[in-house]
Length: 85
Image 1 (cartoon, rainbow, N blue to C red):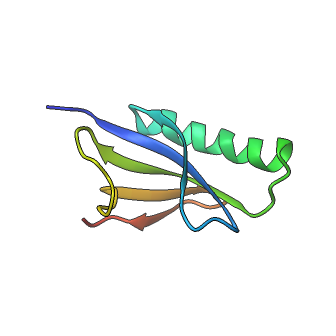
Image 2 (tube, rainbow, N blue to C red):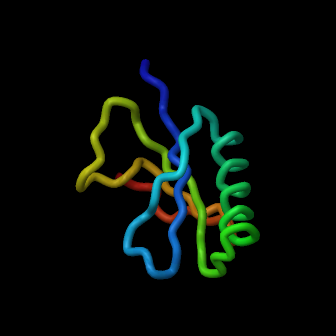
């Protein structure tokens, strides 16, 4: 069985797509990374309209038109954006 990978992403107000920022093998690590990324984008880079989140990817899949298995926006609030395939 191949492990799933959690992709940590961010999106600024002017973006039309999510920007990959990191990867983790566990939800806890990915969630912490997304929260830390939000703080970096807001406090250090002074981006005020930014969202960060996590997408669940399956190893071995290439994502072009296919969407991730699940996607969550972690900051500024927690929600499930997509949970079906």
